[in-house]
Length: 216
Ligand SMILES: Cc1cc2nc3c(=O)[nH]c(=O)nc-3n(C[C@H](O)[C@H](O)[C@H](O)COP(=O)(O)OP(=O)(O)OC[C@H]3O[C@@H](n4cnc5c(N)ncnc54)[C@H](O)[C@@H]3O)c2cc1C
Image (cartoon, rainbow, N blue to C red; front, side):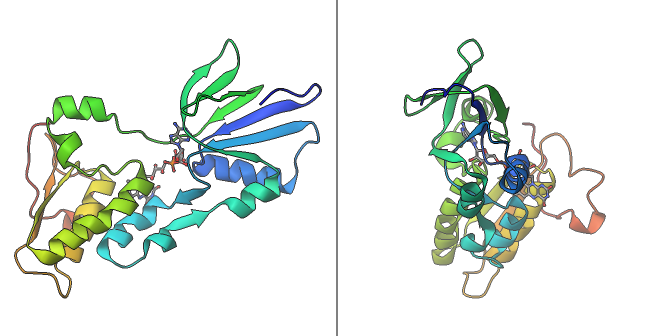
């Protein structure tokens, strides 16, 4: 892609919550001299707040996905399905995994939390091979049914590592799913909290009795 004289290139990198709001604003009114490009792996957002409900079996994966195609079309954005692997401030370009370089005059980054798998592997050897990572969250939503399938054929012991709000919710949701009708008896869920117990702000009744302290 090349720059067009007189036009300013605004590149939105990632389709996180903030960029969805920016797109809503631009769909309503967009300056005539603005070239808008959106870069994200897929034109949708997975609503993380519903993911524990998905794990518990209350929602389908489809219900947790917010399609953004219509909003992207209304905002007049050029959408690039891809992942950024670098940003060069000197040449003012975003490098994509595909090899393409996307020029920007203004760049906004909303790529969300990333789990550093190399670092996690150092801290928890075997994590890459044996763990299901919660981020990227759309990959987690795609892969969770395999865990549920496994638990449907035999009892499993599931350890949720990390006891922030999301970890506590996921542990309770998984526990609910594993005790569901048609599931074999004997599955259980542990919440591995690291040095700290679930946050003091977590309501007492939400702190599962099964939490297992472990040095991270
Ligand atoms: C199970 C769970 C439940 C949660 N529940 C709640 C809740 O109830 N309430 C709450 O406030 N928070 C909740 N959170 C936290 C919440 O999900 C995050 O704080 C929030 O998603 C962060 O939003 P974001 O806009 O920064 O990024 P995200 O929503 O993660 O969006 C990031 C976007 O960037 C894209 N992207 C990533 N890498 C690249 C790349 N290299 N190139 C291009 N695009 C890229 C992604 O595909 C995605 O489109 C929960 C989290 C989890 C895991």
